[in-house]
Length: 264
Image (tube, rainbow, N blue to C red):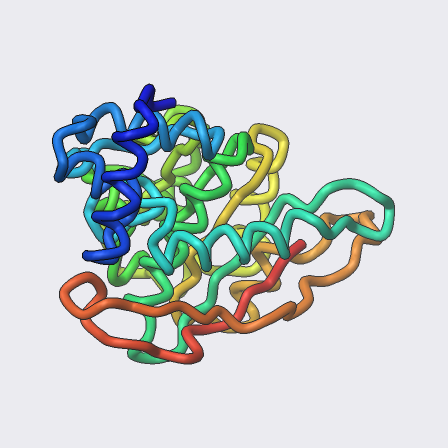
């Protein structure tokens, strides 16, 4: 934590009252702390690591990686709390989360999904983010990673996800990008093929978050339906994702309903 004298505290609180700045911002402005010191203090207070502002390894749209108090980061943690406090009928923890966009709101859902993945990793879950947008991949760009191989590679050619998933700048978060475009993209989302590809991922990660985009119900059932011989429940819609999207960050002001969430 920051080591500040009572007089420094008084001055910072006075500056906060005058300007509306956060405590750390006021401390930096008055010269009582550096931005790096404030960042480290936030990490200690919040119990997880945040990246320094301007870290180019992650897109600024993924605000949960930089600013835990941002409204989008708070929304992501709220969603995380909803999906991680529930359990399956057999008492085992939930492991699958699908974020489904609605038409032109897909970009907003993609950004919120990326922030949710960061929030889950920050909470200590070994998290895999899967970009299901083979026709319009976006997650690799948000995490500044290549898209040479990915989900389309696994679906068309097979292979081991551990060899294709990429480590992000966020501790505990891996990304399975959408992969290169393929001419038979719709055929790749065959129910059994998709289930056979994604189902084993649950054995390697605490949470698998699937950015479904405007996916069909069939695709989502394939991703999160019960395994063969398994009597777990089918995925259930549990809520609507709401987030304040700032202009200049996510190409819009406030979109009340971004999409649905399915969990398994």
